[in-house]
Length: 142
Image 1 (tube, rainbow, N blue to C red):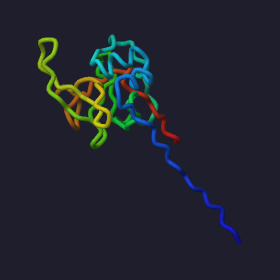
Image 2 (image 1 turned 180 degrees about the horizontal axis):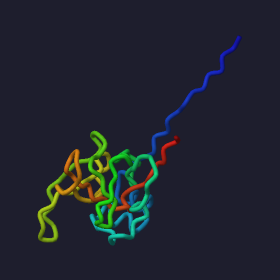
Image 3 (image 1 turned 90 degrees about the horizontal axis):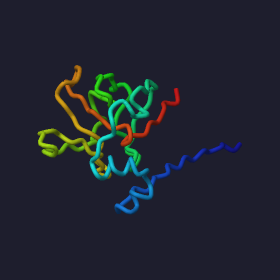
């Protein structure tokens, strides 16, 4: 009697290593946000009103960043989350535009995602204010 074996191969997507590779992978608008730290206009992002269950990933490298369970409507015009997935993001002081803010970057590829503020809901009190252009969404299979 033979058993059928199913072997799953997890394909690793190649992470761009140079700016020219990022430019080839991303749209012009995504490149400006992710690599040049620009910000999309509020209320224009494709993921702002997304209510499906799943995981938000980095548009530049595919790294898992946020669970849909942590998403909330902040009324600011950008997708907002009260928490990131463990070890998914790095936080850096950002003093650009004459403001003191904290930038959120993808831990894997160091791309700019948005900023974090201390005016979010419980349980964390944090608001990860992200650019839709910096994110992709993987819908849960359930």
